[in-house]
Image (cartoon, rainbow, N blue to C red; front, side):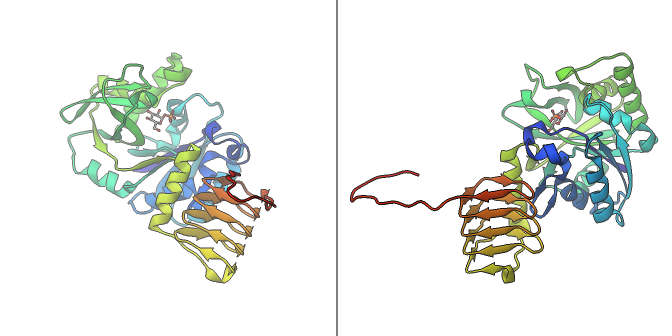
Length: 335
Ligand code: G1P
């Protein structure tokens, strides 16, 4: 089995961070989103990983993956030259997939359960040709939605106005019959059968293979984190730090560090309160500040500021000002 990570999306909901890095390279809790995904895949028996990258900034993904996980996986990088949807992106990898079973895991989704657990659930049942991770949600029309009959998926629809169920596709799929999937994707693309958002949808291809007799089932994922939005990126940061936080006290001078936090190499903190739930990348300096629930990039400078639920990019400078007051008795002021 091979893993396929579609990571070509532009990541518009994470602007301005994705102006300078691909979404999969946005960091949280000590490593890029891609690093967390690869860390989870490293617990499986998968040794070949196909990463689908966009045309711009793809070098960042290649360099990171080879540098951090080049000893663990055999990588193939496939370019998606035009942003025409998830189905289109998977189709670009057809030669690299080469008819083998695949585990698809979206490049912006993290899961509380690891991928090893997903594969274990899939393999417990040899009556189906594939499994789709799902989660019950309040607003299914924002997602791909599946309808099941007993153990079988019978209907899939992408971002429906009138959802047939509350089971949202969560972004992890196991497909054994990749020959059928590639035929279905090829059919959609060759006949310009675009789905939701005018894009070629993986969901529509999965519906086609079911119609052709391929059997799919679902499994429920526990918590999931769509790292493609600032609020959920920060939430994922909190959860991942609560599992595995790291500090190095020698870098802190007259400061209070409230765990969980993750500091990269060469981070210096002076006269500040940092934490909880703060992830700071290499070489950043924090001085006379309070920082909670935030992700701070590499070689940034944070001075005289109270930051919460903030995302600060690499090499950014944030400098506040102390307030000077001459305030009378019984006053009330909100700054
Ligand atoms: C994609 C899939 C959708 C799934 C979602 C999960 O949509 O097409 O079926 O529910 O991921 O995040 P996107 O988020 O790319 O619009």
